[in-house]
Length: 535
Image 1 (cartoon, helix red, strand yellow):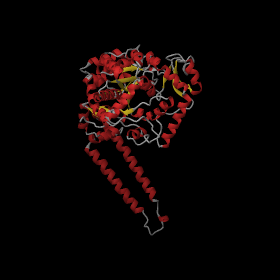
Image 2 (cartoon, helix red, strand yellow):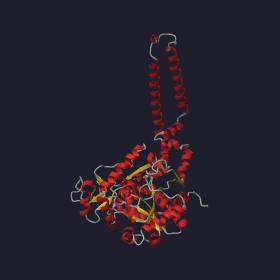
Image 3 (cartoon, one colour):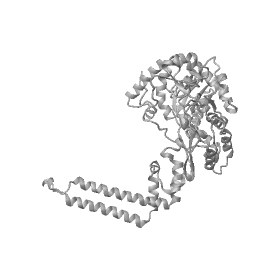
Image 4 (spheres, rainbow, N blue to C red):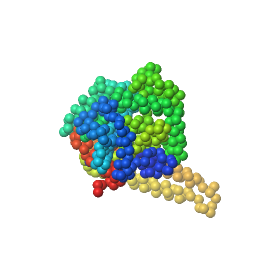
């Protein structure tokens, strides 16, 4: 089952999504988003016009490496159309499900825009292989019949090195866990694709790009490798200009952060004084561990000098500069953003304005939960509510109470009632009438209240120990709870935010992505036409 879910996010993200902040006249925090087909048409034509006479695809073609339907759609957009984008940094075996939700969201939006506007619109997935977040790239989670499993690369963890430069290393344990979680799936070809992508000598970034292309290109979606030399070369002039403008950019960011704080929110991205938004990779000094392949933010004070001396391909954009760079390289009409991205786009607009660049348009992506019927059926049989799954212990406690011997449960309840009654009687007996001096009381009422709390606390602890004994005895029932929690509310979150999708793709086939694409169409129509359903 694929069902649309709320996007969620921080207080700032949710407020911007609702249009409550950042859209006052003279204080726009982000570029206005078209709200109907006519506005989208005007925006698309203006975007295409800004690239008139420029062959943007040829320099980037090696970084796309596109084939089949993706290559055809990209070529048509390069001749007479535009693109719509989304992206994500590398995640182990593709990362959380939201990686695929993002891709299907952009694909559905591109389909809808192309149908409504009558011009080619190519969906593009920006694979941020230049990202250096080891934990994001090296860890994923799997739902199994015995509960949630954490899968991690053996490491060692890297320090500030682009994922495109980090070898995967020993994958034996991680792949074995993935195979077990997939079970006897009918679509072994998906697992074989994962095996082809994730080999010990491949880098984290290269494996991620291989997998994304293998599954997205047949759907018509091209994948751009952000760390590819062609991308770096195409971005070079823009990044040097960003270095020369570093003081101006920092001032603009500081003012925007002040405006966000004044509105009662916290900026999504912390601004570090004295550092530009441009990374330099491979400096001879290396990082703290002596890794010369590491990247480091260029200090503002050194920005112009670095802009003049850096080798082509040595520069990269940080998270606030990347959307502006993307819009400068591609005729992008919109970026489909997750909740965190949507919040930090409030800080992207001043960067673009300070650089004299086009301000990228952003829209919230489609969010989804991909749920197996077996897990939902098991939840129903166990009688576990969604609210209980949100709590880390409530579901287990509820099942344990249900399995508790009736005589024990009855005795505990009668003991609790008796204690409450006797404590109330004791309090009444010790209470001094209002017309008498309170100093005559043997003990203060607060002492009786404290006694009641202490006894109740000890009884609660005793009951928890009894229930823990039930949990140890009812291993099968607790295992069922663990399986339901892993599938439906892993780590207390939406499965989209945590679970890897590969096991479901192995069991149900790549057609699951088509199902997600279809479900995303309602969101896409709402973005483009203002109505969720077709007229």
